Length: 384
Length: 177
Image 1 (cartoon, chains in turn green, cyan):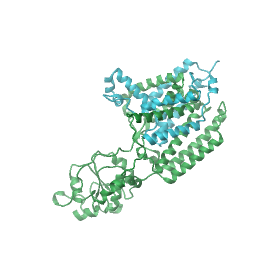
Image 2: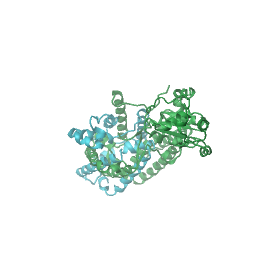
Image 3: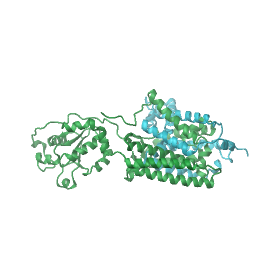
Image 4: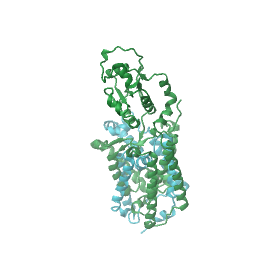
């Protein structure tokens, strides 16, 4: 049995789901208001160094949510793969950001704060909202003229740890250190240019910094789950397939498959030397450390539905681990080549591409049906 | 010159760090419970798509972008973002009301008339609306929510956002100073 794990799929078309999102919106609006974001001069002062609350806010909220998210992922309470990470469209995002930065200093609000401000009585926020609607309408009417650019530089669900290739906990630590530097710097700027004292109490600052440091430490030590942990989540359901020998396919069945209409991806995890000595024609070499295979999971998910995956090792040992890895990532239709390449060579000799017509083999067929994807692929998200 | 700085001095807001640690917790809860971050502009987009659909549903069906939201029988309001943007003004209102910060004012600098400030607010809104849809998210949906889960695009966006603001700040300094 699989343990239910956060996040949960909350359906906004049900009453309960609708209320949950409403409450989150209420919390969002209330905290924006508390921070003084309903008064445009507070926001714009950011750009003149008098009152840096926008930067402070963004960074403290980001740091708080980031630490809590990756901490709960590290301790296994949250499946981060299912969290909607804003999709990266690099250049449209950068150009849109420049336009919005201009709109922010001209208009004094961002969309969320204008909604909050309008509710507290700010008249300029109401006017701003009218402008927002015009701008959004204008975009919808013109986007078909520059759809190419709008859909360009699509990097998908792409996180900084993936980009830099360093552990998530380290990135979290770096962001916290950077944010602390930004806090110290802006406090100094405010002190010099601010029209009034808006010092942050020392005890509060120390308390928050201490709490952040402790939580980051735990995140670093606990580490983000790897493929073994993801396998553990599904092992109770899937290990039985290995034990019953339901997913180990005979070389003969693989050969038939290669020559049939099926879309098949063979993943070779042999040692480099064994791979160089012999491999079946058409395999995709993934190295023998499983790290490459793990980082290719997103690629494999992009294969058409109904694709059959077969892991191939020298024998079954590493190929079985590769099978576990793919199962943990919810990839359907994964099989192991029985006996690995040695089994293949025992059956066909050292022939990478034997002719199926030459062989009459007796074996048990394991692939009886092709399953559609069972779990949604890693979530990506954005702004509704 | 008569200005409404008294509002500025009499209304006291919370320390930004305290308020926004709370916002961070709200954002974390959103991710933890629902897998979605916080957002706003997507909700306004759906409202706009709904309005356009009322006027001409054929026009919406022909526009691939709008059809996503309201094409055919698609209900533009069937999204988590709708209850969320209903909640934002609600929460802001209650918070301002409880802390006696409700005020029907126009926030502006001492050297700009209310009418001019409104013109700037309108123009800023237009820029923001267009930019937010191009970037696929606004300050909350992309920079804040995406930044917290370390999206590369969100951080690139954030840098561009502040760069755009600082680049233009000098030109519009009369609005605020």
